[in-house]
Length: 222
Ligand SMILES: [Ca+2]
Ligand SMILES: [Ca+2]
Image 1 (cartoon, rainbow, N blue to C red):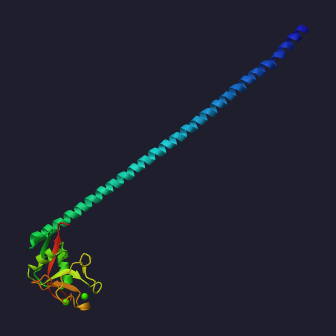
Image 2: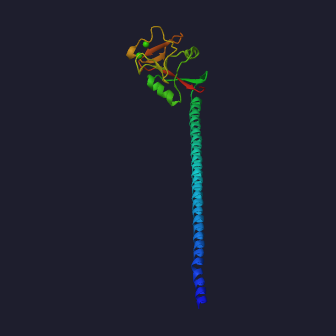
Image 3: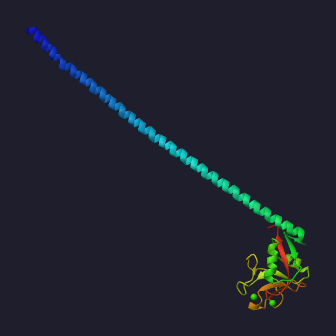
């Protein structure tokens, strides 16, 4: 009986020892599992960050490409519109050249009106033809216009500021061909006609409302 108890003691004495080892193994296995789980979470986190970075990079590239593409399209469209405008302008000028009597000189065509009008009305007629009242830039151009032997409006006025003469394109007067004692009209004479065509100094300031022939200039070569 004693042996039995001893045996039983050994048996009962072994039970907690084996159980503890089993528990240790379970704990170790659980810890290993937790470690693996943590490692997996960290790796997953890193992958998510990399994926997000790749997506942001791709989106940025895509948006940049689209912006660039839009800009290119806009440039092409603007260039096309400019060409269309230039073509229409040339068409109008060619039509007017074909219809009227124009003379070519040094990069421009010139047309002399058949009726006398005030300065502004004459200018409007020139603008309708795709031209403007003549701007005289050189002695050669002054001589060319004098050879028509006609009293004509030119594109020079001091209507804006008395005594400050400006051409119709807004440029100031540098080289002038005033007749002797001209300009002499003060505030009553603000527009200029080529009057004394027999002489190089042929210009006269006169009232803008006077009816006078005019000469248009259409620049074709800048
Ligand atoms: Ca004046
Ligand atoms: Ca005068």
